[in-house]
Length: 387
Ligand SMILES: *Cc1c(COP(=O)(O)O)cnc(C)c1O
Image 1 (cartoon, rainbow, N blue to C red):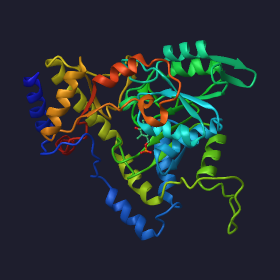
Image 2 (tube, rainbow, N blue to C red; image 1 turned 60 degrees about the horizontal axis):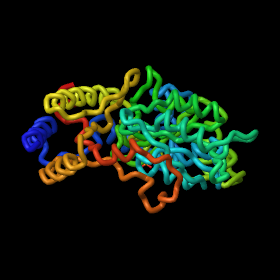
Image 3 (cartoon, rainbow, N blue to C red; image 1 turned 30 degrees about the vertical axis):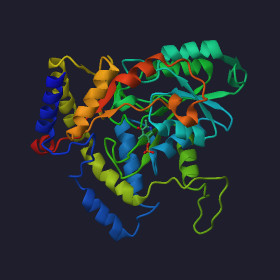
């Protein structure tokens, strides 16, 4: 193992040519500064401005949805997507325990409580089989929705996540939820540029959320987006993310409790410039993942790939070690040598806030929790300059 650890450090330094190698850093070598300056000069730096509309159009076109509504971050986008999907205070939302905390925070903001269902080992995303089994055992279909027999609460939505940009079995999940009358919202925060049979992740559910946080594949500093092809949902999303103000030339009238979730024009300016390079970044990340894949094959280490019929953006390249001990040794060795590697998240079911949420045993989630590591995955400067 020691030889492999040492070779890994050498390989990372060759690829990235840096002293400290982060997990994922943003890259700004397009029109970012130009658009930001234009934005400042225009005075429209806040929640009104052309760049927000332009950014929405660009993202909608890229993912193949009819509409997009930009928000201040991805967590807010999930919150609103759940709300618009009919999630009400006191309801329950099925999700995965193996996710970033934002997924479950958003469920909580909507007044609902998460239920944790297991993931598939290969996708690290919600398992359709586990979902089916959970519902069969615990749920009851009534005239106005599906209810949890144990808690008596309504299960109003299912929120799968495409882990590290590897698409989950979203089609099957949607089919099961349709049978049970449960809405689906995709947490596509990590999967911009990931597809299932040429259809972009986030477009299987009627409304989904993206994130443009600083560590994501493209960034707006902070930011998120709702994507949908349903005109009514898009109008509702725009309305409640902009304080629910009734359009009027000069009067302030609001018709419900809204949110100040609109992405500022300043952030959208950054987003417009980033979108011009997204395709380029995805191409380079594919080259990088091929490179890593070959390296790990030679070293007999399991490097995660998307399942058949889907493609990944390789936002974060991922390893699965055979044992927890090996994984811990790798983390220690690499971080000490300034090559950043990170274990997968602590399961949500083990966090104080979500400890008392119902779960199905989470066999695969527990297995993965002990073995998964992310390795440096940024667009390397030298690859970019070669293009
Ligand atoms: C990044 C991320 C989000 C959204 O995060 P924000 O920082 O609020 O944009 C949501 N879910 C997952 C799985 C994420 O990785």
